[in-house]
Length: 263
Image (cartoon, rainbow, N blue to C red; front, side, top):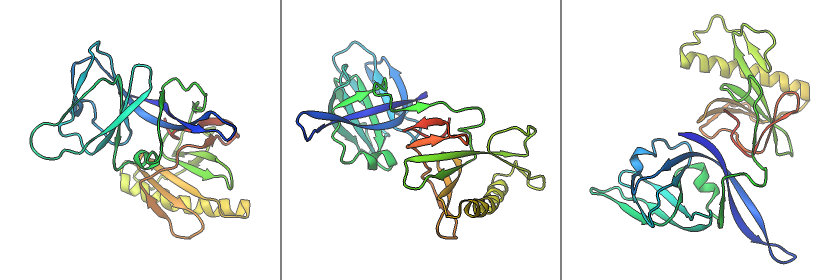
């Protein structure tokens, strides 16, 4: 499976009459399937991203076998990408659970995900898989978008700066922050993680002194692991990592917009 950036479109009333398009961008796993009966357990194998299923058979209806795939909200779109309705896969008992649909595009959103919370009040009307508004950008230069890295939030702005982290590098010309950790066993994940947390404390303190303020900084170690440094002196862990907005390289170049900050 591969990830793809999509947008969901909501038609909102304009104050001068008519409507305008309000968009929500998502990173999804895109899956295609031609079967008349689709076993969802075979295609939904992770919970990190929503899954967008493109049904490519020529049948009027398709049977979705949801057995063992729960809890999910299911969004239906027709062949013209128009939203046609929702369903839920909540069945946890014995036996099978199947749904018959005429949809050609189906979006599966896990009920415990950040995306589900973000879409609670979103009245979708259309799916955009081509980014026709050009709101999504991903153009990571060499060294960027790879864990671990730092994210610095710009105050009163939708912008973030990414600072790549390089541990014991052989190249002196890499962008970002190079750390020499000869006494750390970098093959030991826990030891390396603790060393990075401590090193970032010093980096953050220096950054505060340089800027004469206390910016919000995140040490991002993986898709579900970040440590936040901010106004309080305590370092806080969160499984939700920074994403979206406008991501800048150290040079100020825009390297991503309205998407995840990693490759």
